[in-house]
Image (cartoon, rainbow, N blue to C red; front, side, top):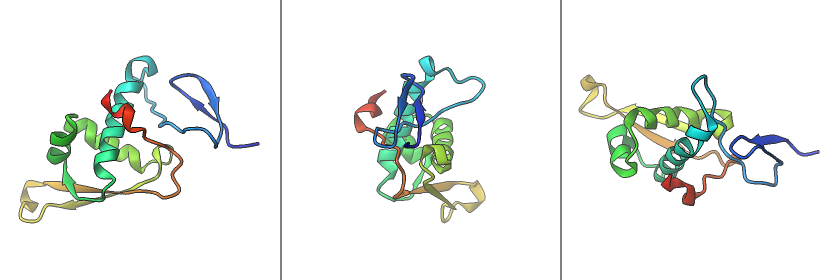
Length: 123
């Protein structure tokens, strides 16, 4: 028997052979209201960052249109097992260390089974 998980948006059982989706949760999380928006954010950020380039939150915001607080949250999510267990590197921006400005880099986990479909990035 394959690994069972649940597609929380549609309530359909899924196996390893089907598309995996990210699993959001939290006390204020409502799948009907939040799933598409959060999946869209995750998708846009993932597809921008998958090239491995270093970017600040401001640079990511300019490219995706997502708020910096949401970008920061989605970068933290990408580190979690249920979102792919990717590596998110963080470093201070050279010459701006005293301002506390950081930039981020995504290193894709080659074993990740979650697929971020680009068509869903528009949400």
